[in-house]
Image (tube, rainbow, N blue to C red; front, top):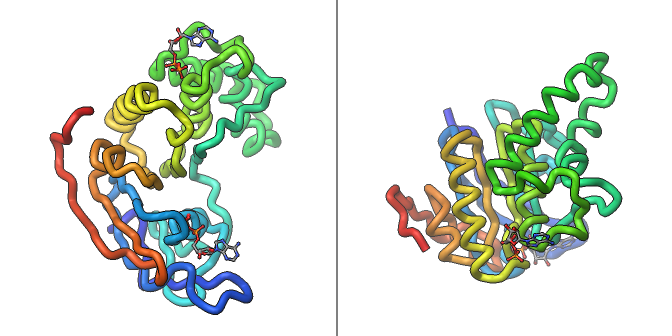
Length: 233
Ligand code: ADP
Ligand code: ADP
């Protein structure tokens, strides 16, 4: 069965005369990496809100991992365009943050902390940040902060990773380097990924399937399979 299953989904924001997205019908396989591309205003963020349960459709249904989504999902990791590391925390403590938010009341949190720290250090190593665990965000370049943000998004081993223009603020060289970092992480762990981007090359390098959205109405107008091997930048 599909992992992400949008069935003819329509959403209008309160007071809006038209739908922000309409008739979104999309199914993903387990472990699939999809990209949503399209111009600003076509409904990409709205799609993300629906996929995380921050918004519910007016019409149609959103089913994720077999469950109809009726509220915010807990098993997703997210990373955004702007680095959002907390400046007063080290890289390691930033990466561990989601666990402190999601699991503070676990009786065994203290015991688990050693295990989580090990997992965090291993992720940091995979993205080339070994040696930076004890540094603060201001001591890291933009690219390094973004790597740390991706580790943070993956620390609780989410089934689904949502990336909203995660590399948009980076220079072209760093961006392409991070594409490879992300691809390695995904190849190793096979979580489900939804990537929103307006960089078509990024979508073509990373995603198994590319969905193109149009504006007014916000619809999916193209679905393209993008089989391996994909062109390396
Ligand atoms: P994208 O992420 O592709 O730029 P959005 O999903 O943000 O597109 O926007 C899709 C449409 O919904 C746009 O017409 C936008 O103006 C409208 N929209 C987005 N957010 C809101 C909101 N909170 N309230 C009303 N309209 C919104
Ligand atoms: P950028 O985003 O500026 O292109 P990268 O994240 O690609 O930088 O990092 C390139 C390399 O430069 C890193 O592997 C690291 O060794 C070094 N580096 C960058 N910024 C710093 C810093 N503030 N302190 C120490 N080393 C750094």
